[in-house]
Image: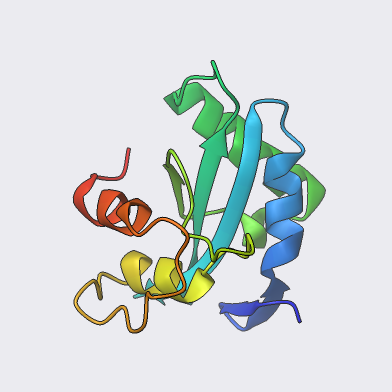
Length: 132
């Protein structure tokens, strides 16, 4: 089941945005979640991991936003692109979006059950590292 976020009254599947982001040759993985936005209701928060050797730069961030705008439309442009070293996953490899949503919303004290994480240190790194 696709996660759906509501951006200014427009329903948008997160998989679409993730697909556009990972189409870039420097992107290894992407996870997109909604987060509270004062104007739009929900904003788009993208966590992006890069391939080995790729550098997180402002130019790359702009390229990624441009790709999403071109492929899906301006409404799908991520409000935040956060380059991260890894994403929180279960032992079976599923990304725990619930945790990513909580971190994006700043609700780091209420992460809930994290016992299924393959590597709990990933969550600590996401909480302590400032978004770039």
